[in-house]
Image 1 (cartoon, rainbow, N blue to C red):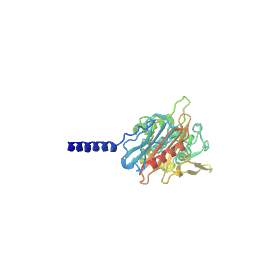
Image 2 (image 1 turned 180 degrees about the vertical axis):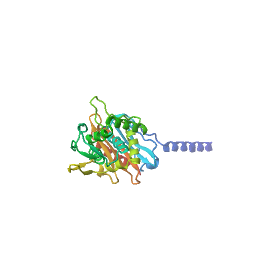
Image 3 (image 1 turned 135 degrees about the vertical axis):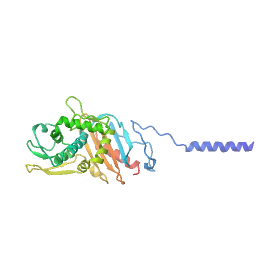
Image 4 (image 1 turned 30 degrees about the vertical axis):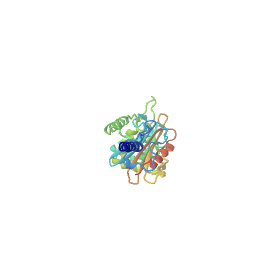
Length: 299
């Protein structure tokens, strides 16, 4: 009898200890935020799992490019179709590099200078190189420059090529209506998703180093044909905040609100593609996202 009682006590102790050590179910993250296929070794030991940054932007993501794989570190509405404002210009730059030599010249005409939201004053009748226009468009987010670059090929054909490239890259939630990202008068606009923009960025990293080089700079100087000296500044205020190479693109329209895509590097030279779309404070939200990533994962 005593032997049976002892066996029962031992069995009960094993079951009880097993219950205590069983892994707890993960708390469901809020607002469509999930961990997907993250290797356990990436988590920092001190990390409190299932805590997420409070990102108010309607779309956000952070994806690690590692050994030709995309590891989702954070996502909020990853595949949601949304206006993307001047993040459009990343695709515009891709089509430019696919079709124009950087040293070729564009003659600025009146139709090229009608876009809203331009800082540097391109002059009617002046000749400007593709390289200079590409820098103006990407760094300053200049809408006239994007229209000039599209017009050289024929604007309608250029936009067709933008959409064909998106289809080729399997950017399934993306439609381009113009080369700048401005909202159209008929209440339409370019749309994409955080997932699609990550696909585009990965393609740029692989095949378009000129874009990475331009968007890594804080400023750019050039002298026009009429010997006017111009200095333009990058609209991305976060470039100097990271210990490793960073680059990215800003955007803003009434429909898209504030947008920012920012590529940061890990110490192992992998890239993290961070996306914030439809935010009231893109830089503040991006800082929250990148700080959380750095505090949560070991790279």
